[in-house]
Amino acid sequence: MPIIVDIDVMLARRKMPVGTLAELIGITPANLAVLKNGRAKAVRFTTLAALCEALDCQPGDLLRWEPGDMDDDGAPDGTGNGARNSAAADTRARE
Image (cartoon, rainbow, N blue to C red; front, side, top):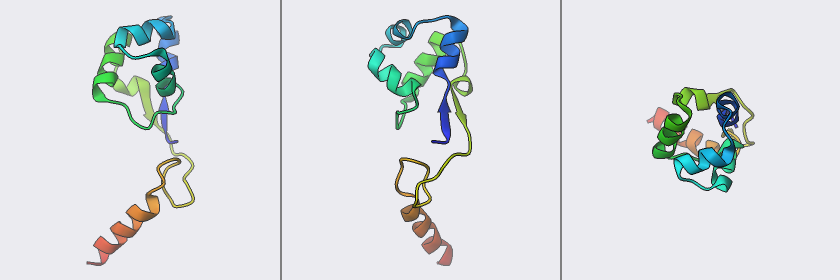
């Protein structure tokens, strides 16, 4: 996936255990692990804000974009709707 989550980097810089961060932001350690390991499909702005407050950082310290692999249909890995979106864009472009 082209969005990289660097929560583990900030945790190491702050010398903070994952369980402590989960408690501070009010989510379960399991849900924080899903986010930290890049398996989450979305993140709420309230969660992102809580992460930034607890880690004393900016959103860009936690999330970054890198060009990544695409699915067979042209969508970023895991989204599965790139061909549908491309077809819609092509239709609009012809109108």
